[in-house]
Image 1 (cartoon, rainbow, N blue to C red):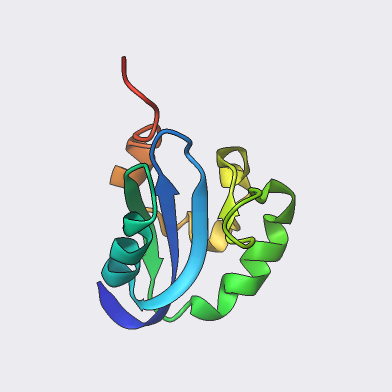
Image 2 (spheres, rainbow, N blue to C red):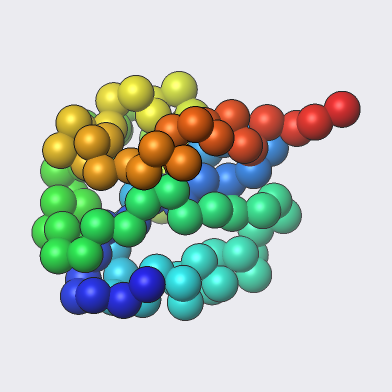
Length: 105
């Protein structure tokens, strides 16, 4: 998934926490993050050309920041606060599988 500096949202399995960042190569970034994560990670969104929105999205979500991740990881409870401009870009498949991260018994 390449196409210029894009904004990505990657979610962590088990916790549902999500990361908002920017990259030119989201698959490479996912691989880098997965190396340090104890849980499966999944790309929910990659929006080429929208990397410049990263800071404003971080400001919007600031009260949902996790204690780890240098301010780029947010608690699952903040997911509904993602700006409409980005939320509207999620595929139907992602929205239908919104609870993919919840542990199964």
